[in-house]
Image (tube, rainbow, N blue to C red; front, side):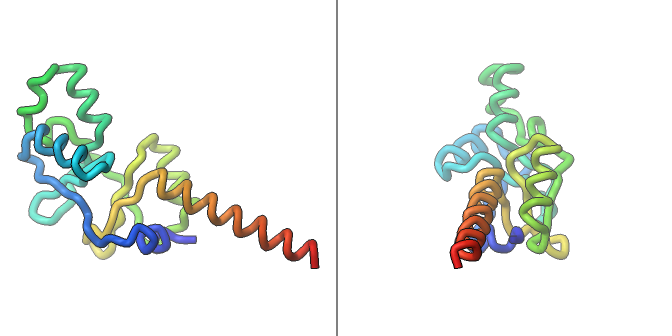
Length: 142
């Protein structure tokens, strides 16, 4: 199964982004209102980073509430690992586990087309394993 299947099941083409100069408070509000764990940081359409809830919590612990007035660029992760729609779920799971991150932008021809989370990946991997088990049971029973 590929990343494309995850994006299709999520059903939305909308990718939540924020600019690097937006205040962290705006990012926190968007994360809360939209019930997501990260925002892709874009500048002129190019992906320049990713900001997660963890980044904000880390900033709060280091700087206190004043971090909310800082620009997103102060907290974002600049080195962003991405994938394509054609990558396998196993490959993406390996990248996320090895890199210890939970959100990954999906890129095609240099364009941001989606974001997947480790939860999305695990959910689809479990569905794959259940389908394989059912197929094997059917094979053995026949």
